[in-house]
Each structure stands twice: as structure tokens, then as C-alpha cells.
Image (cartoon, rainbow, N blue to C red):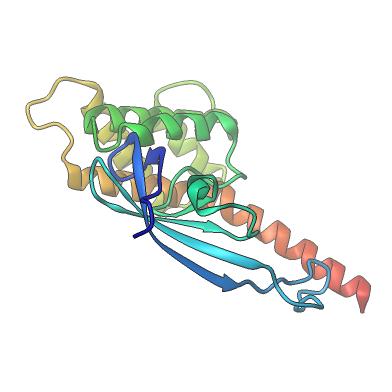
Amino acid sequence: MDKEIRAVAFCPHCGNKAPQKLIHTQHYDNTWYSTDTGEISEGPGGPSTYYVATCETCNEVLLYLDALGEFEPRAFNFSDLVWPESGLHGSVPSAVASCYSEAERIKNLAPNAFAAQIRKALEAICDDRGAKAGPLQYRLKELVTKGEIPAILADMSDALRTLGNVGAHTNEQGIKPIQVRAIDDFFRAIVEYVYVAPNKLAEFRKGLSRLKKKA
């Protein structure tokens, strides 16, 4: 029987930096596409690997991807964690991403602190988008007026603000685990609209522009 392979890495499930055990390795041939034409590149694609691991603190499953075929199985944690989702897209400003990174690490360990930190991340979005200083409630409304976020996301933002207030103060009820999931989903939806979607659209337009020049 092969020796068990372990590595220490952050687990988004439980928020701990803990040993993770490799339980399955799946190799496949990746397909490469030209960034200029969008067509399949000439020649074969590169060897790629999925690594399935389990966190030895919470026993949850994690999925890593090595799309370049450069890493040995014993270094699977140097590959990209593709599930569960962790961190924010590269288009998100560092101030916002930093707030979220701190929140993510305490998501399941301290729900109240997580909600309060997400509220802080909303403040960071307001700062980045140029909303005037003042209560968060009015700053979010200003972003709606400026067309930075649509009304439905403003409602989400206000709900996050309210839950953040609950998390920041001693409360008998506090933030429940099921609310933590909703808070995380809502915040990611806001970030997707404000930063990620425009970034992807810009990249798509660049690709179209290159195709037109080729034509």
C-alpha cells in the first residue's frame, strides 16, 4: 500500500490551517486555446491533474487542480484550490479582498465576527467606489443613485449591513450558521456585479478586438 500523502493548508470549510490527506489523483489531458483566435492551439494539450483531499480537522473534501502538470502528488496543496471556492477574483481591489480574506478565515469559527468583518468589507467597497463618508446605509444608497449597484443588490447590501451590526454587538440570538452562508453568498454576488463581471466583459471585448484585427 502506498504511503499516505499529507500537506498542511487552509481549509475553507472549517477555517483552520490543518493537515490535509490526499485520497485520489485523477490525470487528464488539458486542451489549450489560443488567446488571439480562441481556436484550439496546435499540438497536444498539457497533462493536468485533479487532487482530491480531505481535511483532517473537519473531514470535509477539497478539490485541487494542477493545470500545468508541474507538481508531484506530495505537493498537491501547491495546486489551485477549485472547491470549495476560496478568496475573491483578482479584479477585486486589495482593500476589499483583504477584508474578505480575514472574514473567510473566521466564517465557521466566529459567525458574529464574520458578519461584522463583511460589514467592514462593504465599507471598503464604498471607499473604492467613491461614496461620501457617512453611515453605511446612506453610502450604499449613494452607490445605487450613481448606478454602481442595482436596487436588488442594494437590498442585499442593506441586509448585510444589518447583520453586520448584529454581529458587532452582543446579542442573545447572534448570527446563525445558516445566515453565515447567506451572508457569504450575498457578498459574493455584490462583488461579482461591481468588479468581476465588468472585468470579464472587458477581457471578452479585448478578445473580440483581436479577432477583428485578425480578420
